[in-house]
Image 1 (cartoon, rainbow, N blue to C red):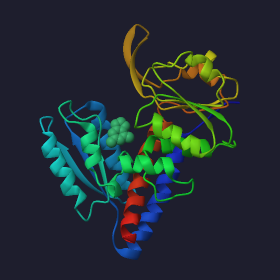
Image 2: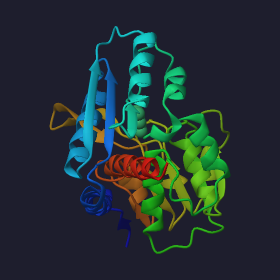
Image 3: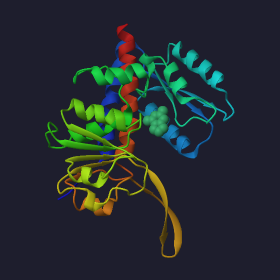
Image 4: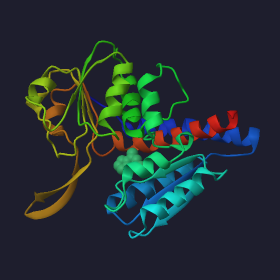
Length: 295
Ligand code: GUN
């Protein structure tokens, strides 16, 4: 029987745990973590994510400091806001929703966020720490989506050591940090990407496949070996024709109907990785808050 990995439930458990921890911190020190959420412009998907992140943060007791800036905001203005937030005492985590408008250099903005307040774990210092730190460092700020995938993998009844893992996609947000996390678990990791030759064969040898490319239903049933674990990071909106009517539907990077027949465990879309990303953002904010109390 294929196990459906229930990201919604695992994320809920993580949020419950964080809520208890934040309640305790509030009782003990009279303060709660603060998360600044910055959106520039009105990309529809970003608005959905920002709304969901804000709602979840408030539910666990995090204070949200919301900054929604207009599309025309200059890089300099955004940098000034980040600097202000870097120095603001009630802000422990800063999230700048990506993508940013084309006229703003994303890396310059990500580099300007204070590494201690880097709720996404995208700052080069935190990227570096992830690659050199040992396995049990609880204070690291780790990119949310790959960390969420790791939590789901660790919740399965499998030993990750020595497993062949293929990560499809080499983004800074998911693919590269995912590979680092799997390497830390002693997996043998391959990163596949758009220029990779014979990607199907690589996948076929994998015990674990993490698909994060943004290509609807790319991973087919005959790419996956029997019993593999498949984590689908993709969230793609496609048009489907149902009874002569065009409807939009969310699908992952994995052809779920085909791959479910082969995998021992698989994440659905929606309800798999998505909720985990948000829960891990709240976790990072809480870690940043606790780290700030030590200084
Ligand atoms: N855009 C897509 N995913 C993410 C994410 O995890 N963090 C931020 N800041 N922007 C994103």
